[in-house]
Image (cartoon, helix red, strand yellow):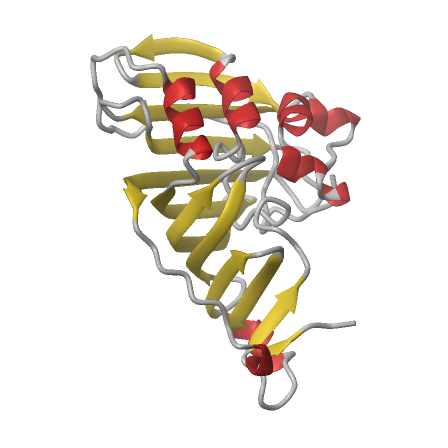
Length: 248
């Protein structure tokens, strides 16, 4: 697996402590609840805070906020704003209709005069915009994650899953050749904790990772995703063709 820790940070988890979160004693089926949202192609609001440390020093910090639309095999559209330490600014990310769009930040410097959006021929499911692993918007990945549950208290689940298992389960990871874990990485684990709401839908996913043998030094990462307003209405307006640039 060659993608950097900035992009995904697929490494084993080193769990220090779990944060507090909402708990619900009802026994709703979380997989059935997500599959219903996927079948209906529903939108949901998402926020994600991600941190990576190398040799205990903060290397990357990102904040992503916006909305995504579910579908098969994963996301079918999104409208997101991302702020990252490494990018040194803010970017807007859009996806729909077989294309992804990026604007702002360092991407702006690579655009020709008069163009404000960079367009690429990737579907929303091919180009997962989040740093969190696993991509739980995919029903197959969500099923694999829940299968590794080691503890459940009401609507709160927790467990650990290997990177090799995640790669086999996730369509978006398999769609990107550089995301295939090597032999060593495939055995590493992602430790996770999931809070669900009264309907069984994800309300929060918290994951932690660490890799003492990472090439640039011992690395650890934490990702905190929040989900709200399942079924919200979103009017997604894609950039006009004259404002976009697509490399040949």
